[in-house]
Length: 322
Ligand code: AVJ
Image 1 (cartoon, rainbow, N blue to C red):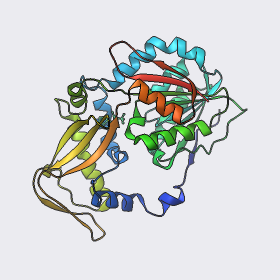
Image 2: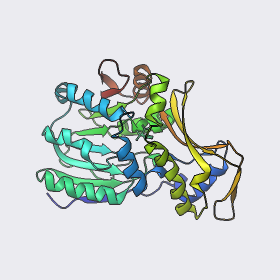
Image 3: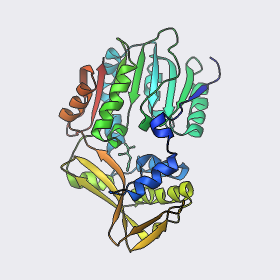
C-alpha cells in the first residue's frame, strides 16, 4: 500500500461565490437566524461531541452499536466483499473498524470536512490495517458528494453513512445527497445508512439537553467559532442552550437563546441586534420514522432496501442497493 492520498474537493460555483464566512454572516442576519451545524465541529466542538456520544442520555450511538452487533452477520451477506469502503463523515474513523475487522474491505476512503482529523485517522488506520489501502477526500457535504478518487480495479463500493448525520440535512437536501450517492454507485454496490427515529419527546429532548450540560457547552461553543471566523464579538454568557422537539417537522432543534437584549458586531461592518428571548438555530436533527426513511431512500432512487433495528427503539440501519 502507498501512503494515504488525500484529495480536496473545491467549492462548486454556487458556493464559491461566497466564502464560508460571508455565508455564515448572511445566515445570522436572515430570518430565522441560523448557524449551520458544521460550525459546531472545531477542535473543542469535536472533543465535546465525543463526550456527548458517551452520555447516558444520548442513546443514539449505543442503539446503533446494538443494531450492528446483532445484525452484522446478516448485513455481511448483503454487502459486497473485496470492497472499497466510502466512510462518509469519517471523523476518527473508528466506526468503520467493524467492516475492516470483518475482512470485506480492500480500500478505505474517508470523507470528511476536517483535513487534520482525516489525515490523522488515515495514518492510524493505515498502520493498523497494512493490507488495506487508506485514502481520503476533504469536502463539505453541503456541496453534495463528489469522489475525485477513481475505483481501483473496478472494485465494488460500500457507502457507509453512520451516526444519523443525515438527520442534520433538511429532507429535500437529504434526498438530494442520497441521490448523489446513488449516482456514484454501480450494480453490486451498497449503501449502509443509519437514521434515528422519533421516540418519546421527553427522551429526545433529554438526549439533546443532558444533565451534565455537555450538549449546552457544545452548542454555546459555536459562538467562539463564529467569533474566530467572522471577527465577531458574541458573548456566550449572554445565551443559553435550548433543545426543543418540533413535532410537525419531526426534528429536534438546538437553539441559542439570548438571555438579554444585545447587539453583536459580526465583522465586515455588520451588526446583529437581538432582543431578550430571541434565538439562533444551530441544528436541526430530523427523526425519521421507518416509513419516512424508506421514502427518502426510494425518492433518491434506491431499491431493495432492508431495515435493521432492535425492539423498543426507533433507530434504523438501512442497507440499500441501486
Ligand atoms: C452528529 C448530527 C448525528 O444530531 O444527534 C448531538 C449531533 N447534536 N447532540 C445529532 C448532535 C447535539 C448529532 N449528529
